[in-house]
Structures are given as C-alpha cells and as structure tokens.
Amino acid sequence: MRKEKQIAFWVVGLAVAMAILYILSSVLLPFVAGLAIAYFFDPLADRLERLGISRALSTSVILLSFFVIVGAIGMVLFPLLQAQVVGLIGRLPDMINTFHASLQQYISRLEHVLPVGQMARIQTFLQGYTGDAMNWLSGLLPQVWAGGKAIVNLLSLMVVMPMVAFFLLRDWDHIIAMLDSLLPRASADTIRQQIREIDKTIAGFVRGQAMVCASLGVIYGIGLSLVGLEFGLLIGLGTGVLTFVPYVGMMTGAVIALSVALVQFSNPVDFLLVIGVFAFGQTIDIMFLTPNFVAGRVNLHPVWVIFSLMAGGAIFGFTGVLLGVPVAGAIGVLVRFAISKYRTSALYLQGDAAALTDAHSVKSTPTEKN
Image (cartoon, rainbow, N blue to C red):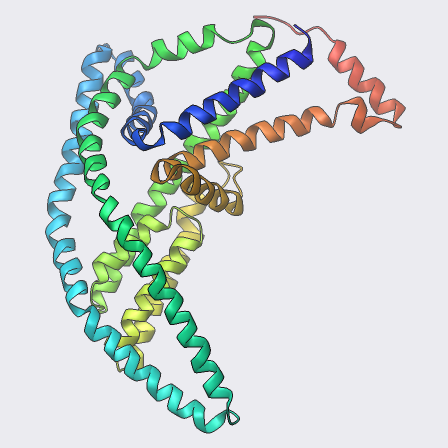
C-alpha cells in the first residue's frame, strides 16, 4: 500500500472513531471510568499474578479493597460535607446582603471621588451586566430540568462502572495482546515504542497529580478549618480536587475562600491567616509535592493540560474532562515523534548536504532484531 493511501486510511479511521465517540458521549462515562481504574491497577494486578495469585482473584481483591476504601472515606466525609453544603446554602442570602452593603459603601465613597456623571455611567454598565446575568440564569433553568439525567448517569456510574473495571482488569493482558497483534508488522516496533512513551507520560502525570491533589486537599481543608473559615473543609477539599487543573484550580479555590473570609471576618489578621494557608500549601507544592510526584516524569506543559481539559469538556462534557489529559499526553508524544522525524528529513535538511548524508546513512543502517 502506498504511503498516501496509508495516511488516508489512518485519517479516515481516526475521523470515524471520533464521530462514534461524539455520538455515544452521553453513555461513555461509566466505561471511561472503568477503563481508568483498570489502567491504574493493572501494574498491581501483574505483581500479584507474579506471586502466584490468579488474575481473577487478584482483580477481585484489588477492586473490592478499592471500593471499600472509597466507600469508607465517603461515609466519613459525606456527613461533614453535607452539613457544610447545607450551611453554605442557608448562609448564602446573608452573605450576598453583606457583600451588597459593603459594595454600597464603596460606591458612596466613589461618588465623592469620581467626576460628575462618571458614576452614573458605571451604574448603567453594571445594570446591563446584571441583566445579562439574569438572562443566563433564566437559560439555566432548562438545563436544571434536564439535569435529571445526571442522576441516571450517577446510577449507571455506580452500577456499570465496577463491572466494566472488573472485566477490563481481569482481561487486560489479553486485550493488549490482541491489539498488539493488529499492529502493522512493518511499523510494529515503532508504534510500540510510542505507546510506551504515551503510557509513561499519562501514568506519570495522572498518578502524580492525583497525589498532589490529595495532599493539597488535606492541607487546605485542615488549614482553613483551623483558622475558623466557615465551610473551610468543603472549600479546602474542593480546591484540592480542582488543583488537577494546574494553577487554575488553586486560584479558583483561593478566590472563593477569600470571598467568604471577606464577608465573615472583620479582623484583618483572620483574613491574612486564610492567605497564609494558601501560601503554605503552595510552598509545600512547589518545594516538595510537584518535584517528587510530577516534575521530571512528564512532558506536558500546564497550558496544554488546561487547554485539553477545556476542549474535552466542551466537546464531550465530563467524559471529555476525563479523557482530556490522556489524549493530550498521546498527542504530545506523537508531535514530538513527528518533529524528530521532520528534523532528519530532506525537507528540514535541504541545503545542508553533510547532515542530509548522515540522515540517509542512519536510515539505511540495518537494525538488529531480537
């Protein structure tokens, strides 16, 4: 098959696969979650299998332990978080009124400072912005009505996902062997090498960033609770989860925490303590967490990660968020591979006769086979 036909075949195949994923995006969540769990626990299952434990028993022990631990953590945290969520909803009107009163004081001060008529233009702008916000809220109601699908998705996640994880983890090695047998023989070694690079990138980032998120969630949750911030545990754990998105998650949590502190505290020292909790968390992250768990293991730029999560969420919803980082890692590896090939091609080396001769000699050197 000519190279042009090969390229056309893979491009069409990729387009068809993307179209199928887009059409089925509403039912993919439990399958993607089950695939992620099987992927993460496959090394542990292989280790138990080498100790003489059957694959089916290893899978059962691993997944049962995992879901028991997750369920236990959920049972401990759910009452605390539920109380804070209910409290936040109950306090929200008072917090809005307090914020509105503070805002009116600043407006009164600005009226004496700004030129005549300037404040009226600002108020007109704010009124138009408020109208846009109300229109957005009214458009949100149909989405809330359709949000009943979220309950169905949650139930399917709880029922279907464990079964998918079990069967995928049990048959993981057979599935990989089957896919490997389908690789084009002439390019099999090259494809395997790129897949190993993709696996290294994805595993390094996701597992490492998960450890960073868990650690920061504990630090922020305990720290904000100790300084007396209302809903500190909820905000801290939520910030830890959002930290999976580099920089954006921490800044979002900090803005929410400082907004609550602005309404709650009148003493500037308390406000500074909230800032100190985030400063401490970021110091631990920069000096210890990220260097030990993430840095040096992956080649994913934070901007590329943020873009992939936003693009995946825009196209496939929450399922796209789960797929964003793996797809970004795969694309990054393939782009680096394409660049390395480009730098040894005649298109790049044209005009450099010596380098072009060296590149041809490297390509023509026969490779040893195991």
